[in-house]
Image (cartoon, rainbow, N blue to C red):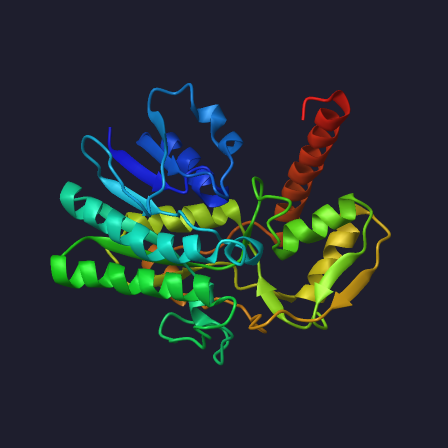
Length: 322
């Protein structure tokens, strides 16, 4: 049984990766300091003999006994509300954490995949964004702590690949949604749905003309899995090229939830990207991958998850258990 280490394993994407690798027959070691992750995302795996959980901060030290075949580095705050609240930790996990894990991968002769992001493109001048575009990032702006952490992470990973011959993979993740997102993580979809469920108006920043491209989590996990097992060491965009404005997206959420809220507008945050859409030509060619789940179907599943989560929280508060 091959062994895989997944950092950020209690987070949104990390927990789905744990499920996938368990399903594929791997021994899974999840590692998380729970600064943004939630142990409830993986508690269903605790009874399994082929699953382990380490409560650990990869920025400080990483130790895993025994052999390792793969490492997937998904430990990092991933939403603006998080990395603006904990900027130093965000920079550390992208730099020190990555360095520690690359050292572990080299010692174990393991293949390592890092979770990079579309944010390496910043507020892009090229649309859609392809992997050869170098980006337009403000290194000293409020989003710079996340953008530059990920750009450094890519550079460090490629250095280990070229200098030490380490097997590495780099996935650039575009906007992703699905069950296990936090209602309070500040990104558009959970923000809109949580506002609708609370009977509040939906907040759109700017005039709502900025675009995003939303990929359902199952599609993303499939792309990541295929990239890990490929022989391609350079960055690959994984996301859904179906682009939509934030205003249109808010209108879709209102229709989905059947609420009567209206849209209210607030000033656009500093350095907020105006356009975000992946060019997935490389993923199609190398991985034979493209998203399959429609936004309509994915949003229905996600909405039901959030609705049940809110109902469960309300019940817990009413019963005094929380």
